[in-house]
Image 1 (cartoon, rainbow, N blue to C red):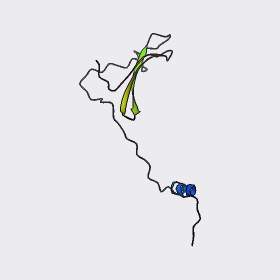
Image 2: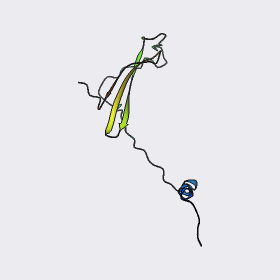
Image 3: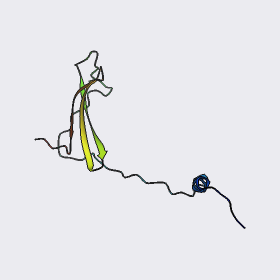
Image 4: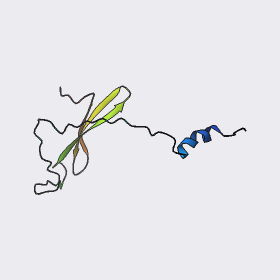
Length: 99
């Protein structure tokens, strides 16, 4: 008996019947919470010492993100104004080392 089926239909069948194994993404842990350095309190969290930015240039926040590249990974460091959400400064580098 001959089975007449198109190429696209053939490739869609395993997905319809859940026969495909999901692709597992790589997980990179970038934070070490158990270090010997002093941890400053987060003053932006709700509580008795909470700081609220009522106008621009009062509170700046910083963030680091990793950008996947063909040749490896780049690090993007951002400093953002908490009230206006404007980027005050940034740096892109191959690592987080200071000069």
